[in-house]
Length: 309
Picture 1 (cartoon, rainbow, N blue to C red):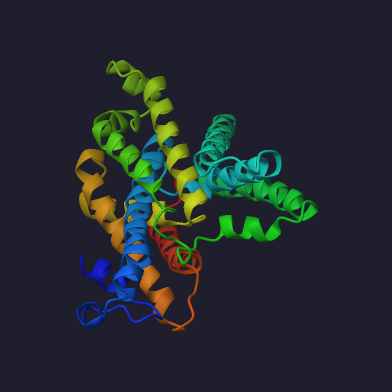
Picture 2 (picture 1 turned 90 degrees about the vertical axis):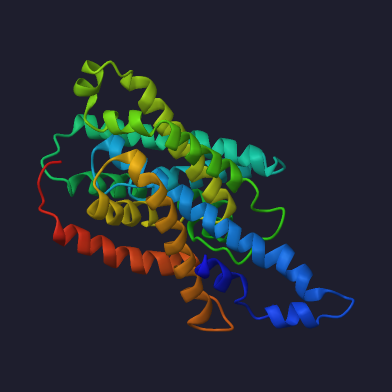
C-alpha cells in the first residue's frame, strides 16, 4: 500500500496532496492524477501480480524453479507475434494484436516443452539454459526481420519494459490478465498435483493434459497482454515465486496470495528506483528489474545444488 502511494506521487509534474488541495479551477493536478499517475500505479500492481503468478504456474508445470516467460522463449515469441501482426495487419485493434501475440506465445511455450521432452535433463540449470537459447534464436529472427522492415525502434518498445507511456485507456487489458490469475487461483490445487509429474497425477485421477493446456493458456495470454501493454519484464516470474517458496514451501494455493503481493511490491519498488535514481529522467523499468533480477537469479543458482529436479 505504501509503495503504491509513493509511486502515485512521484514524477516531474507537481502532483502532491498539497497541490491537489490547493489547485484552482483548472484542476490540472487532479486530471494528471486520474489520467497518468493512478493508471500507471494500477498497471504496475496488475503486472506484478500477473507475471509473478504466471512464473509460479510455469515452474510447477515444468517442475523446475528456474523458468519463467523470459527464460523459456515465451516473451520472445509474443514479440514475434506482435511483429507479424504489425507487418500484415497494422490497423488491427490492441485486442487483436494481443490475441495474435498470445497464439505465438503459446506456440513458443509448447515448442520449449517439446524440446525438453527430447533432451535428457540431468541438471536443473540445463532447463532455463535451453529456454534462454530458444529465446535467443526467436529473438534473433525477430530482430532480423524488424531490421529489414525498419521496425527496430518499435521492437525495442516491446522488448524493454517501460511504464512511462501508460495512460488511462492504454492499460485496461491488464484487468484481463488479472482475471486469468484469479482463474489460476481457482485451479491451484490441480496445478499442485500436476507439478508432481504426469504419471503420478494421472494415477490420482487428474486429467493432466487439460490442466497443462489450461496452464499454458494462462501463461501465454498473460505474457502477451503484458508485452503488448508495457513490454517484456524479465526475471519477475522467476525471483518472486522462489522467494515465497523458500519461506512457505510449494503449495500453490497457499502461496499464490503471497506471490501476488510480493510481485506487486517488487515491481513498484523497482519502478520507484528507476524514477528517482536520475530524477527528473527515468530509467526503463525493464532495465532496473533486469539488473536486480539477474543478481538474484545468480544468487539462487549458486545457492541451490545443481541436480535434477
